[in-house]
Image 1 (tube, rainbow, N blue to C red):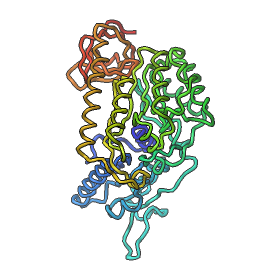
Image 2 (cartoon, rainbow, N blue to C red):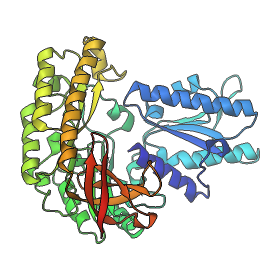
Image 3 (tube, helix red, strand yellow):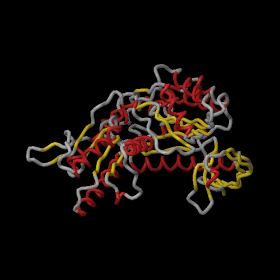
Image 4 (cartoon, one colour):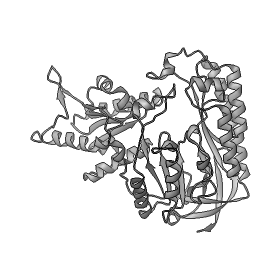
Length: 444
């Protein structure tokens, strides 16, 4: 989602006549788009901003304009200016569509004292210039996230903003705001434009993507309507929430040819006690029921998940239930996190009582199980021919390209630049936990 937001910001700059720079040392404006899901992400962003601000100061030049946006900007606001007083602007996650215009105005102000500043910098009582800070809400912001740069074979569409859930460990509702969905007609128009520009695959994005719309039927209907667009070969979405995963949505697998057989379905914990503490409005049995329905509908489906180990109060028995669920669901991909308190969330008010070494041990147990199931899944592909959408050059030698199967597995194989954007039948020759290699047997 941050990549999509960043592309939208960059496209807004291009609309104003700016060009993207491949080298930050040559840029007239640098914008850091940030995440706040974990504190480490904020620490890295502050470090990067400190570095580029220091480089500007050392150069003795007034440029580049330097600003920060996204979730960290929303979360910390004026605190960023206190830490980094030389920064030019801080714009929250609900105003990212204003980033390019703000940077352009500050740039013009620096070049010419005659250009009105329009309040983009204000003076402190001491007369010092201070950064422009705007972390206010914008009720129309979800309608302004539809700008793209040059389309490739795979494109993303943000269908909504914000989150209406109340998970105890998550800061996203604070940083992204309340949930707002875009009109379906706008999404369909954006998809048609992307496909006309060369996209073959569309990925729908939302913090709780299947909560889209005014009722629980809106998301399945959107998928059905998108599948009717001529030229769309593949359709994906992320990340859904188990509580909104209806039978109608499950039954679209195998019904819509474009809907790829891959689901990222966050479990978080296999313990009902911990799920309740996390304010996750489902229980382990319900989650397993969804997984079983998906596998019955599409036996080849790939299912990935998110897990948090060491949540406050998680006992050995609670973790064993998570491990048991992990095995039952046979996840072949997963993001496994060791719990850490996040300021501003409800769980941060609870004592972090699981020792760090226990968290690490539980983390390693799940990672070992994941390596086993992922390897088994990959090796089952060896000797088979898989449909692959050729996406881009791979990072492993001349004339080696990468693409993904319908189940979202990355495959590398010899090809040429002219093949990008085409579907290919690829014979899978070998597979490890992390790498699948093959050879094209037929281009479509």
